Length: 272
Image (cartoon, one colour):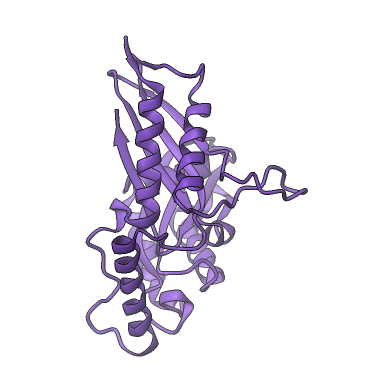
């Protein structure tokens, strides 16, 4: 059994959370400007590229919405840790330090009705998967509220098939418009259950899954009909990437989740 120091976990995650808000690995080398862009869309693309540059060079957050912190943990069965009886307190401490000391906006409220800010962006949303080996791998994802609000889950009849799922994804994108700050990175989860299909969509985003290329191609074929581009202005680039994740499901169900992420796709991974 390998014991990983709890403080090492906190320090590594604090650095990662600062990085994904200012210079995320998922956006390094990315440009929003594409050949043929003109008018408002071309100008918006140039602004987004400039925002990436300034955030990286000056250590400023890419967006004023520094997001909910999602942490996907792959825990080796021969790995354990010190400093706490469970991982959640260590992960929350990393979030606390990164957001308080890193100048990142705290957006979490402790109760959905009382709406009092927790003041340190905790708690993190944590998923743990047991794997072989003796490592701890953390994939961090800063998820803004705007694109989360236009994401959707549906329970379709099995007869809908791939085309029905693609049509639902198209309807979600059409209705979202510019509210979630496109160009979107889209995670589509299909299968599982009502409670698990949203996690499939998130895993699609976090790990660049392409479980069903046929579904992805059907969705891509509809994109020219969306009617908007970057930031919702007239244009032709409403989506930057689409990922798919599928899982077994009940014979009478076809659960679908469409998770939209804004142009600031803030994701990174660290392994201890």
